[in-house]
Image 1 (cartoon, rainbow, N blue to C red):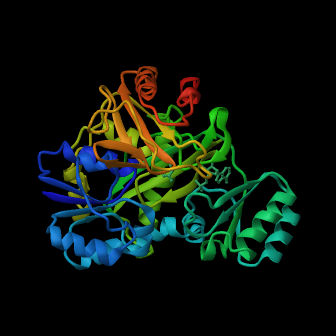
Image 2: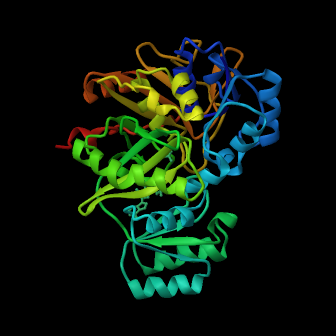
Length: 425
Ligand code: AMP
Ligand code: GLY
């Protein structure tokens, strides 16, 4: 098969490396891709959000399958456009992608179908939002932009002053444009977070191996929120009992609810969960593979990914036995100094071979460029250095040993990825 992957980060690199393992893969293409991806797939400069451009590219290349990985093209309806042209496409259509595209939609869905989540109210004018905050008087308070906001649309306000400022900048200041003209204010939950990606064809749902993200920029969960500074899998807080509770109360009810709403979800549905003292609750849904969760989940997959994508498209997922390696995986993100705020680009990188790899690990490129035989930094998150091992400690040792071999000016990474998981009972 000739396969086109849409996107250009570490997640897409991990998807491409797994597709490359399949006997059914003849040729891999990626748009826009990045420096590391370009060593394994032919890359193009069509933007991931350019629906007409991607459809035209898929036609020109006469591909047999298209995988749409990032949230924005999914929410914009890229899958609908590709399906309309007859392409076998992996990813939800626009009607289903709203589960991530609108927090108001997803919160109302959970309320209607009794899926456990934080208590919430919705506001489109700051006066009523502020009146509500004052009447609840409960902090921290969680304020979320309704629409996509590059992962930055959630503010955890520690007091009334911060909460009012957040509401005003989102609704009145249009901090995230139309995305924040409506906000959700919700109850603050506590407990360990678990990410569960799942394959679903709209009929059944097959959870993948669980994982744990590390969202803050600095060690000890300090510093600013980022897209994710590292991940480990499996997540020790996702016990068998928790998995059973999730399947019964969250995964199956969500799939059924989407179907009942006429929005059958086919693709990868990501459940962002919190194991609270009052049971597992949904923090968020994403309509796609997580980044950097995918980087630790797919290396553990022991079933042909092309077969799975095809079965999701055909609605025959029940016919496939999806197997996982009995191992652990860790991904340590190397970021540009200054990320998640401003940072330089174009810094030369050292320590990787000509494919952008280091022996014994998978180096998934997130923000790199390959020119004249050199790799240059080209984004905030630059690399996800990923290793598998029989134990989490063994995987982490390999990831960190490889991280130490790679260098670029002011490279920043957390030194405590996996520590919370290691100390979990
Ligand atoms: P989200 O973009 O919805 O995943 O939110 C980003 C992060 O904010 C989550 O990973 C949580 O750490 C935190 N968060 C979101 N909602 C809540 C909540 N209701 N209570 C506590 N923390 C939350
Ligand atoms: N790592 C979180 C996400 O992909 O949204």
